[in-house]
Length: 61
Image 1 (tube, rainbow, N blue to C red):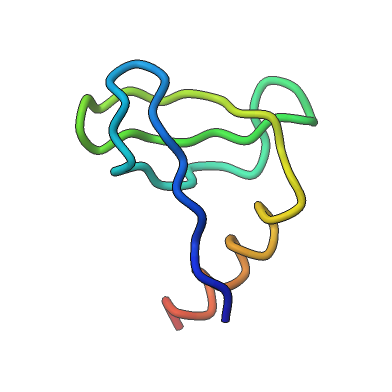
Image 2: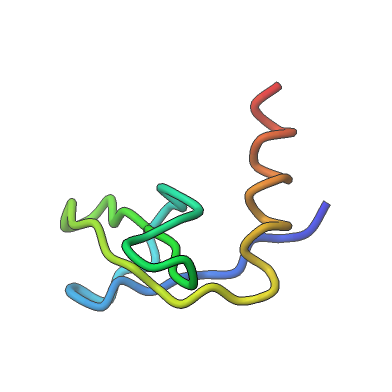
């Protein structure tokens, strides 16, 4: 299992974020949610997003 990379909220600078959806308004973006300022935001996908999503789902089971 890989360690999750930190995603910084562009609004408040917090790293208390979570992956919300694998698809944003564009296919090349993902949606995150900031637990600090309670703001959703999008980020361009990178190679680690899918691996982190799968690891998170495996932990939930």
